Length: 319
Image (tube, rainbow, N blue to C red; front, top):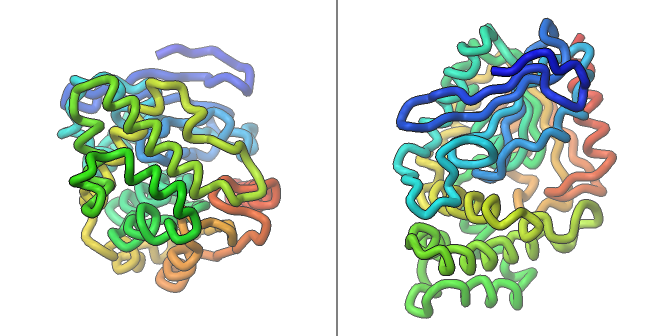
């Protein structure tokens, strides 16, 4: 672990935590070492943490912990290597990793912030360890149900038929009428670097197409990933989604009562075709201690308006 890096743009501490199974999870702490603990849970799965997320927090009041989930970012072994085994990379493993990290850092309770896949992992962790969570802030709410996945990799194709046809063409012809997510997962675990790179590019082109109608953010956020990060992202994402994140269908909404007493803020873009707003709506109805705000000018990539809502909520929770 390294210490004494006072600049706010840099972590004051960072390290690699041995979480077992040959896995080491990268983490970094920003802000005030004696401030209110908060963890940023990144999306993907497999996207890795983004240091820019700390800008949402008042770093004079927060101790913000970022970490890369198994197989991505600066965690090792990296999923971009064809030989990296993903058997020990599941939702249950990630929940256990978060607990190990909390204990390693000596944190009793922490605020959890994240979006997209990060919201699924936060809900799964918080429903299992509610006593360790002080507040929750989510955007781009998703619970990774089979119904949500069927929309993202099928239903929403009605808006982007030409892009979807290209997406289908990325798998062998015999598999195009079946489970596309599982077909891509097989390609990403073929062990053939060229096949993996082609499949990753095809997958990311589809993800970008779904976001293409949004008015804010980069045009191609998934294709813009460096090659190794892109392969790790798609390998991990297809691995998780082919198994519906190993979650019982609807369990996160069913068990939202376990969050009773935990204040929550849900901020969701009205234009989000990737994670349609009805999931956030149902979660807010099942979790009385959460407030929900829809942002009319935002989609999955967010907007300045959405980020200001997040900052305001985090400022309020800091008090």
